[in-house]
Length: 420
Image (cartoon, rainbow, N blue to C red):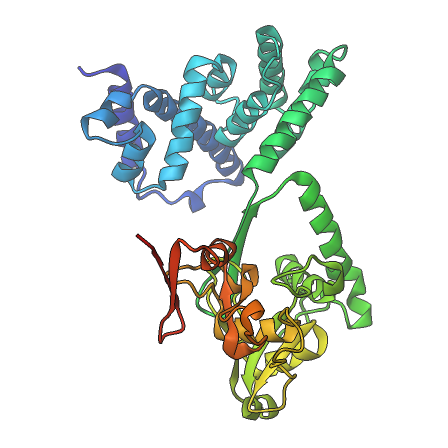
């Protein structure tokens, strides 16, 4: 005989194997409903067993050099490492600190998402919350799990001190919120990644207050009550007039409309200019129904994105986007000695040719860079494009540092070498 856990798992496997070809469609509605509820309860119990084992599997991971037991299990079962690491942390928490939650899972009174919500709510309590209050909060949330789903439990968890200790709740709540807001500021992230199919995936983590503001702004554009006007993003899907456009799509279009409605004159100066996007397009493409245009890169890691000529024409008309038409008339860019500082128009022209700092190997965006006179203005150098170089702050300082030799390469890059 092996360990009781191993024996039980073998018996469970045998029982499931015995019904692998059994079709539940032939069960009565009452049998089917009872069986689905029971299967869900058993799934939670089995999850607790797995978490219990995972909590003490560090030696298993160490034997094969895995970073954590979660990483090892992810590799063995082809799960995402992040998911298994989270389960490992949950298992450790249940084993060491959250006995009431573990007991609820073990008895089938809690499901796994509920357990995660409770543990997260307890972790979010102020760090100086007395142990006995934390235990009371855990017991109360486990009791409430009989009536509330994970989302509602998380909401209740944020106010649990008001239930178990109303006399001290305000003081603890203030400290808890301060800690959460500080954590939110430190953890906030936003990433834009081109999918290569004409779309860009936006992923991020932002504070609740920021999310509430963004949601309110988007709802102003996405409100389905605007359907009757025929102009709102909540109007029916034109490809299927019988269906209302799904909200995620309405929200995406609302986000685009929100950005187009933003007034660049009220934004910070960006790259020495008002916040402006430049679209480069051939005159022939601009005038025809075909062709493509290029959107300038604006952030580290961005690439130059291609859009259709039709989209470029629309943006140039309505979205505060400046078209740079190649082959057509443009603004006066070369001002010679008329003034010392490069103009906004000159900076736009420089950004079209050099989307990043021109220092060799530097990928700082050109919008973050400074226009540098190759021949100093004080030495008679003109303020025109032929004498202009885009350099980030670090390389601009080096260009004026006597300890460095500066050379302009045929490629347009600038090479720096420290003098001996």
